[in-house]
Length: 379
Image 1 (cartoon, rainbow, N blue to C red):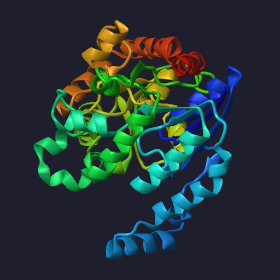
Image 2: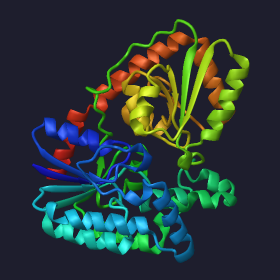
Image 3: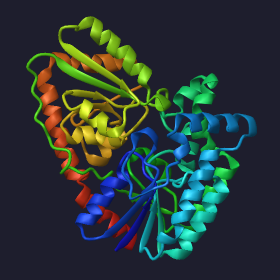
Image 4: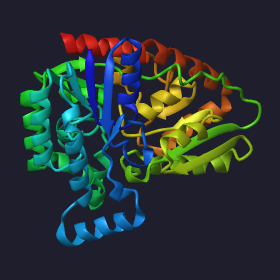
């Protein structure tokens, strides 16, 4: 098959591409690399105006005065220049509802061209989109990334990017997509639940993880337990990082001779995965029912990850609590308590580490997952 993947964040499309290529398919990946994370793509449409400090300052100034986003204009121009290359594909898959990341009407214009030039169009639900944001906004989940906003409306400015998915222009884009896609696929439980009864929903396919690139290094605890906390400042509130910081301060106070804590901020992907190599425990996110991509890659390397591992996820995979990953609630005391449990029972760290790797190999192997995608696309 000839496959076009549009958009990238979290490295999902890269891992899927690697699995598809190994299985004999021809794949082209176009995207922006997702800002500072700088994920690799075959055709890069990221705006130069965001990379040059002076130009970026100019872009922000123009937007502040005239409300015109020059970066989106640049993305549109860059995408238009390569549009003719996106012809004759058996399958086109979008990373989410705003995969090109330009203006809504321009996005629809591009998508019409893509639809006319190719055979089948599919959509991923693996991040914020209209369906998942509306579900969370209506408080249909016990907690979600919108929980902080529900508790404190003064945080609204931190949620502008997410709340835009509920805007009228975005809803029109959402409606256009659902009228034209052959189906939508969820990457984990967080997106599976809101889509469960949607007529376009094909089902959940676990995130593909390249287990050949992420080797298991058996954990050894000879001295201190290493804890890693990587912060993306844009998602600080939505990931629940404040709960981790409070918990870590408590652990540092109680066990200064037993732990070594490393905290980073806004580190490019390639550096990020190198920096946590020596860690035993990774603090990932709070407001989730399932694991995000960073958590899965850490689990593949045998790390004990504090992340989403809720009952719905346990039931789906028929697992026991805290056997594969540590379910993390928005409660600093409970996070500190679970950290303390691991510090005082280091054999549990070794046990969970091995279980995590086995789980990733069983359910997230990129080659197996790529075959599942092809089955869904062809069905």
